[in-house]
Length: 256
Image (cartoon, rainbow, N blue to C red; front, side):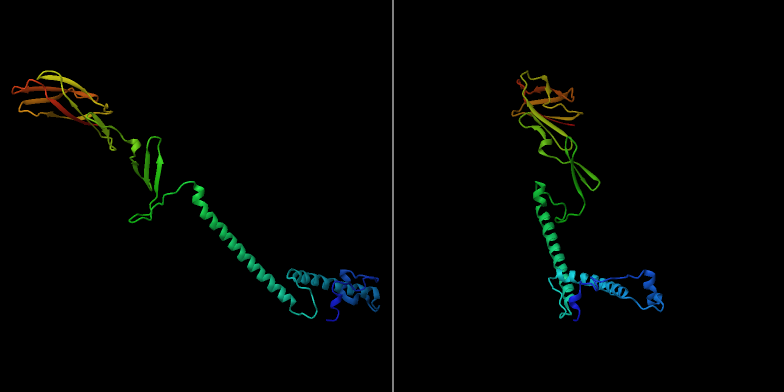
């Protein structure tokens, strides 16, 4: 292409110029009237055209340079090739960015449980289970459970159990009910009355006491409960039929 080598160069770069004003340029040569244009004016005109061409050439050359292409007058498709290169590069960058983001997020997901420091319990999704929110919490004395906004109350655990097993003992049940039991063999005569102290004082009330004679003979005996309270009761015995020694008594008390 004739003049290709002149890109980036300027007409009359070493000559004299006489730039026209914006008003004169808008009027064209008419502002000269019958006076012919001067060499200096022509030099300015061509410099102005070169400046515009060089600005465009600089923009194009910068795009070619990014694609690693050197401008050449015999290659009319260089700009198209450079643009295709930049589009492909951008697509690759975006794909790499997406892959990197995916790898990052995948890494975050894969480390979430490890970062927790414990193994979580999956909520719902089990056989016959709904998607209701299951909430557990501590109220300073017991573990409580709530389904959505429905309070289930305390979850019974070993730490809440209280009891003592043996011949004489007691057990506190989850409902708040307390059962106590024992055995007493009086040292008195055939008829006697003796006080029994519960292993655990009922906090609210003793509702019922049941007595059973440990009778392995044919003697007839009777027992009764006296002075029932939260802390104990009294056993009254009375025997007949030649029974001279008292009989043992099993007792069971229920309260709260």
